[in-house]
Length: 144
Image (cartoon, rainbow, N blue to C red):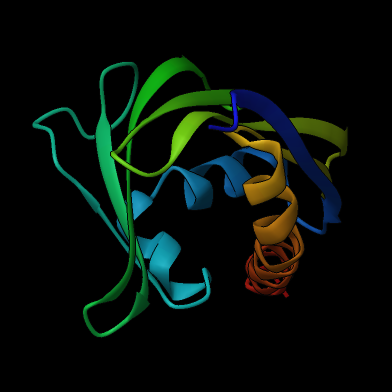
């Protein structure tokens, strides 16, 4: 059996919007489905934001796909949000980090540490990277 290991994936982009506007849009969990490809997102905890918020995201078509469950572990508005993936399939951590470039531009750094056997990660990585890259591009365009 292949050993599980941590695999890193990261994407950065510049968004033409003030840092607080970018943060507010990212932290609106249930609206993430508007820009994430084939994904529906919902909050599953009574806490709606901050540490302890629990979120589920289903990516797929109809009932065929993957359910990703997460819990917020770090919350420093408008700069950093960390999550731990708690689902049966997706394990690891995720982070979004915002950096103010100037009053009208923000750098958005997205990263994931996916715990999976290396061959499986290498197989899914291109699709995951492309899907996230397209989704983040769609997110950035919501500010135009």
